[in-house]
Amino acid sequence: MELVTISDVRAAAERIRGTAVRTHALAQPWAPGLWLKLESLQPVGSFKVRGAYNMIASLDYEQRARGVIAYSSGNHAQAVAYSARRFGVPAVIVVPDVAPRVKVEATRSYGAELVEVPIGEHEAKAHKLAAKRGLTLIPPYDHPAIIAGQGTIGLEIAEDLPDVEAVLVPVSGGGLASGVGVALKALCPGARLIGVEPALAADTTEGLRLGRRVDWPVHERARTMADGLRAQPTDLTFAHLRKVVDEMITVTEQEIRNAVRTLARDARFIAEPSGAVTTAAYLSHRDAVRAEKTVAVVSGGNIDPDMLTRLLK
Amino acid sequence: MELVTISDVRAAAERIRGTAVRTHALAQPWAPGLWLKLESLQPVGSFKVRGAYNMIASLDYEQRARGVIAYSSGNHAQAVAYSARRFGVPAVIVVPDVAPRVKVEATRSYGAELVEVPIGEHEAKAHKLAAKRGLTLIPPYDHPAIIAGQGTIGLEIAEDLPDVEAVLVPVSGGGLASGVGVALKALCPGARLIGVEPALAADTTEGLRLGRRVDWPVHERARTMADGLRAQPTDLTFAHLRKVVDEMITVTEQEIRNAVRTLARDARFIAEPSGAVTTAAYLSHRDAVRAEKTVAVVSGGNIDPDMLTRLLK
Image 1: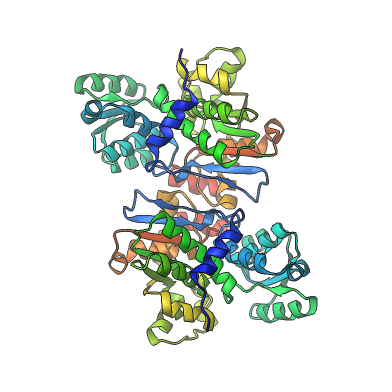
Image 2 (image 1 turned 90 degrees about the horizontal axis):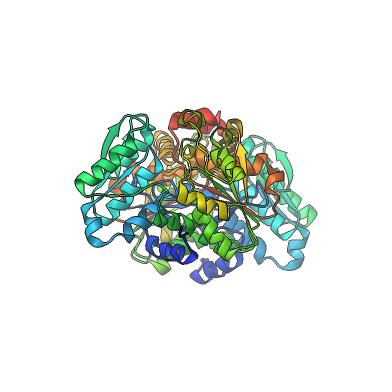
């Protein structure tokens, strides 16, 4: 299997310039030794715009003009809708009917056509619609262009903090961790890449220990409040993860809640639970992080307002 | 009276590099035409670190080694404490006993010596202590080095968005608006500088209309929830404001509340009420802003957690 290379990541960085924000690793005086990379500052509120825009930009003109389609309950949907609008091409998003309203409405606001289907059917429906209408499917993580796009985060970390010792990234489908890992291993070979999962959706932690993908039932993974971290790696992303992830840390729901609250109070920005897991790992598992200079990737900030109010109490 | 020049601002930019974060004007897809400059991302959660650090860095070695003192109930106190610690010199902060606890505790956490006195006495007490202990007073706005430091925000705006048409800045003691104005008029002469005040503390709006400083009773200014905007210009800052401010907009308390909530929900970061007034002006007074490209300076994010929870409801 061919893996993504640092050249792919560099090419992605050129493509996304001007669309994705070049975020900066920000030192946190309340936690000396911790730098935060705030992907919540992206125009769609998450890192997903990097991969989605990179893939759409990589399509040939005719493919792109026919339009794109994605299945996603959340941040990827917004990223595809936003990126398609930047190119002025149609986007169809298939969402499960249980998707968080705040994310569905945001997706609609970027001008995408929304198709709601029962949960469990959205992936199949997207493939069917893609074939029927000649749309290109933009997958959430299972594609080299997506991995390369997310990898631009690693490129920026290496520029900002070349002597970083540990980088914390959330792991779900594995696109983000794969891409960041490719960049980091090429540019900062001394740094450890630490993947973070909720303990309630820790399939990758188990899979990497066993050396093979494992499948956790969807109802088990659905228990975590980190709704962006309920997916599992594919063959492609798992192959990357085996090569680039040095360690995994799992965090409890309480640790995630505490991290959301701490980020709001001490760092003055809003992280969604999936984005806060890396801060949770840093604050609650310092022994496992073992580093003088740590970057935590805060992957997104799209949180339901009611949940935010509850978490801040 | 000698006013601050663009050269002073450029020199300040060199001094503060590596201490103050170089923030970026971020486009907001939920409000096309609006870019936000998030000073809440500064290490102390507000722009105040720019001026305070610039002034401390401008002192000669012996002055600095003796230590610094400031009187402030809020963000300036944190900025002086933080900046002094960067130089390893002592800082004394005189705070009124009614100061927001979250700001007082943050100041203490940066290693400053705190002296609490009844409100109304803190300025006099600071002067007395400065004389007695040989400390240099770092004023919150009434000094060219402070104005030049805050002006680095204008320098960065001009770099990020050279064709900006309107820049919104909060006005209180006037250091921020003066500095940003100096940079903007030098580098983007076509852009309008719009000062924003709470209607409940609109002394500068009245003063600029009359062409002279006016004095609002402190109990009147204390009515606004924007606790960082209760100060008034001095002769020095008012002279700058007369020259660089094109217009003023006043906002209601309800408009401020709505802006804090909108920033949390749509832009995913936390602004304190004083920092949210510029967004409030943009959202609620679009006719007065009249621009295709507007930068709103969000001056800080240090808000009491209880107030934040209340505002998000």
